[in-house]
Image 1 (cartoon, one colour):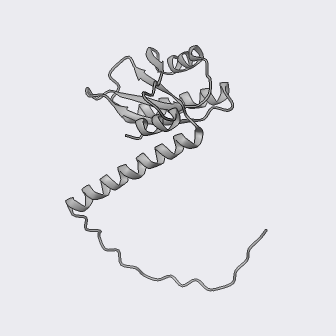
Image 2: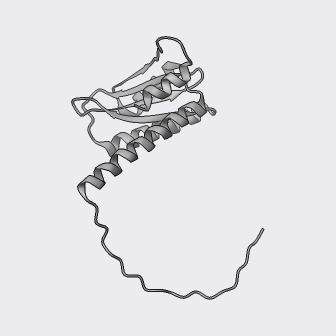
Image 3: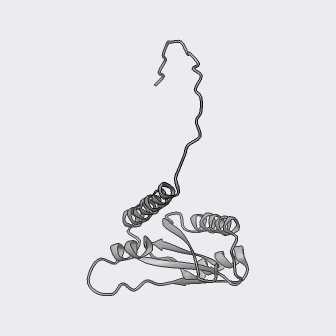
Length: 150
């Protein structure tokens, strides 16, 4: 399907004014952005029916966000090659000492030895833990979604 339109283009001059954001408004924007991100994580986890959590950590005190995200991207590419139906939702989190690690929500069965081998091929020494034990009554998927979105 092709869509064609006729008309004239008139370039208008717009004067750009600097946006004035007060510190209060910036803080409110940050809070609202965090709420939107948590909602998106929760909805994504529920849509993939994630019922277990994978935690990827580094042996050293990794504080470089760019490198950590690059490592995660490489890891997910390897997992998608090994497991064609791989669906995950990842969250970057920092420990109290400032070290980055990832929580990944998964649904389905995956061999933990293959996951460990893939993570260690990227970072050298690291740790991989797969667990999530929801306590009490209720759906494991919704409890994991609530936990990871916090």
